[in-house]
Length: 295
Image (cartoon, rainbow, N blue to C red; front, side, top):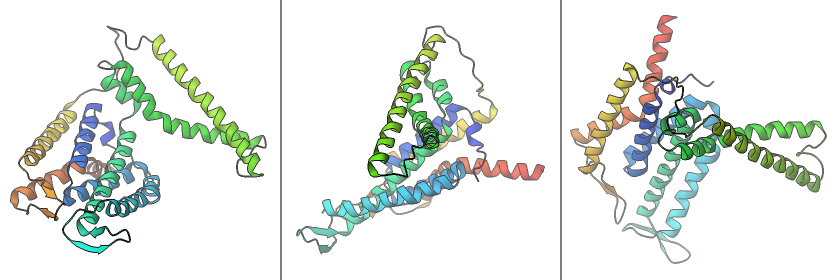
């Protein structure tokens, strides 16, 4: 079951700032603790947003991809002081290359999962609202690109079902018949995609999109709840960036695996980072608690 997301109801600026911070930190912090925190938060939030689809995506695509990166990195990177064995090629297999491969795989999976959450929360209308006045043409293109894959997938299912009804089933017949049906469906979808892009562009042009002085209706209002969320995100971002500049997230993988120890300051940074990553889930849990109390 897919739950109703409270965080998505916040102002688009809050949504965008949150994902900007989380994605920036997820791509820059290679410390194992922060990688695991971000991965756990992103996975839980994607499950909350998309339900079983997110779990299927993680198991079918993310897990094999992580295993592949973990295997590939030691095969091509031979740095490190701790030699475990030697490969048939004569190159050493080091512990550090394996650990770095695991960290890289975790970072890549984390970023992809957060981008899937971003795609669910930052809808095309929110994107156009945020950047329509600043970069109207680019915002329209990015908005169309963000929603293209979901629309293309849904339309492909419709076309496939329609072709099946007229006796052109892609799952039956000889290999040449299946190939011919698949090419027909692809041709239909290509024509549909081009026509949809032209119709969208003509529709936006007829409405005066991008013209100077054009006004637009918006349902988004920056209220007190959004101000509180903005203050919280600014505090977390400033606190974590200051700790980052001071070396609080330092962790190296070559030539030996070594990181800074945990003192009260570094523990507080990890707690703030965890609170930042789990912010949407905390808001959803609080809203669910209020709803159950009212019922």
